[in-house]
Image 1 (cartoon, rainbow, N blue to C red):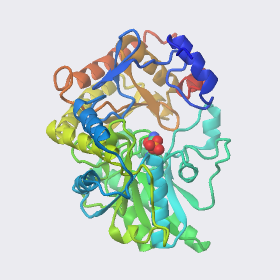
Image 2 (tube, protein in one colour; image 1 turned 90 degrees about the vertical axis):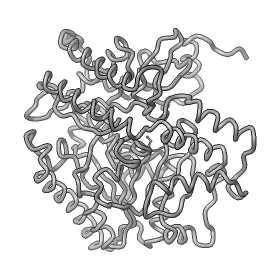
Image 3 (cartoon, rainbow, N blue to C red; image 1 turned 60 degrees about the vertical axis):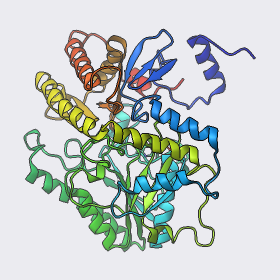
Length: 488
Ligand code: PMP
């Protein structure tokens, strides 16, 4: 049959044959991607957009090194992991070199599979059954009032990982919070259960105190679970909360949590699906950010590692994988296939050759200074600015004292950023009021080293300045929620 050509026709076809729950960005005017290159996406008219949403095309869309690594291997051979391939072991070795204290890799195809496998590894190893996950502190009553789904801890779309994702459960689907899942408050000192006043948000002593309060919450959950005859197999958390609203946990939090969890026979799993591979700049992994020697038992990874090619992995210790599956073991048809491993090797090569960690760190310093200026200039609506490397969030508020989320402004800024500046942004956090910025790390882009970062900051400043003359734009909460969680 003739293929649809115009955007309108494509959207109609999509509506007809793609499931109605498949979300789409910018529902009122979805973006048709005609091509992509490095930090840019291009629409069908040739208009160029700076892509700060995708966060998968980590070293740049269609980076030639990754493209040739994938295509050379694809033209050579692909096979499943039960055949011997030099690419598999080379890839595993290179990943392990970034994770001291770990010695074993199992490749899978998606972040969801990686987290599901982490659960199974934890259960088989500890002989316990339960999981502790973190959640943003927001009452369901409040969520209902603002009529939006909260974006909270998220670990994937499989049934088990949805059960471990407060973002997904209890939203009217068949997924409800099971008995084996315990929810600890997200260690968010700005918007979480244990908050700091503005003046103390960067105060180390105050942060240390909050860190203990948050890790004690985990300790209490473990004790409560044990008192009712249950045992914790794993604590799982992102290294930095992405869907939870670009949250950086205070220093010491994971160390303390690990102490409590392991004292009770459980494992600590860090989900680096969004945050790994140099996004934070100073380190390859976000859980290494505080350089405090914290080593999780299991690290799960995905998105950036294939630059768009589906590949994920679980990295841990041999003692843990040896207990997996009893006599059945583990087999995954596509996990660890040579083409996927070549994608990873291509990404690692670019990170090394283009010094992307250093680049990310440098860009992070620019973000820090420039976003602080935006916060100072618009202090009435920018409640908090937080981030590191190329992982940033702008927490927009209606009221600085109450920190009431400014969902409307976030939605307006996102629309304007696209329409007027060609910048693609999205919002996150339980209220969708946090503008998140996660551009690709590419440095050898079409222009100078910091071109993208500076143009991004410039655009944000422009739209911020403009937005006050656009206050008349009245986006009702409903249309904003529809826009942010757009269903075709
Ligand atoms: N963990 C985190 C933190 C994620 O952001 C995601 C995807 N958004 C997943 C797990 C699931 O990854 P995938 O979509 O590759 O299954």
